[in-house]
Length: 218
Image (tube, rainbow, N blue to C red; front, top):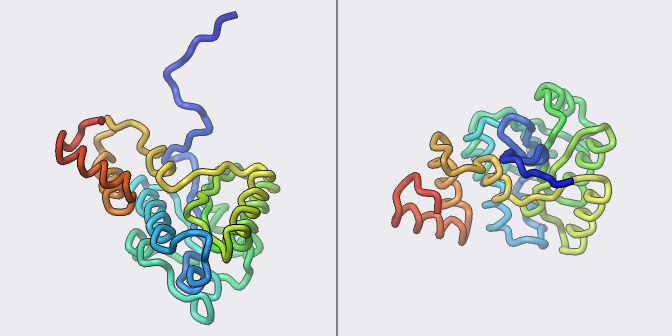
């Protein structure tokens, strides 16, 4: 029996309206001891997520831990995207044990979640594994997470994947939401985020836009 290809995306690919984004504890004190990823890259990747979610109108939950007494303020890259956002502060390292946080998750009405947080092995791992156990579909943005060592980060990622999480990166997230350069309404949003925060890819995007114009697909 022959199989015919169909020009339609896989259901597992993310789109702007089928999930909620959760950003957990991207705070100064949590980043201070993060060693598994360069802090500049970590902040840029978290910024890609935040600005993409804001631009594509993805329901977004931002949570902090002990913001005023220990872990400090959120990354500027996140507050720039969501200057007036409700931020759920917690005492629990596992956000999934906080009733206010859970109320916000339920309010999104989404059973597909995209999660990133510091540290990978604690404040990201906890809600990811808890959500999976309760039947949610979870994607983990591994390059917008970090831990005190590469070992801690990698073991946490492995643990989440073994539990059923799907790994992605920040640029994957942005480009998966856009997916088609003919979508002119979000073309400038996507390329703008890439040029500002996307590293080498952003440099390439800027070159293409300079050489070929605003809406070329190269």
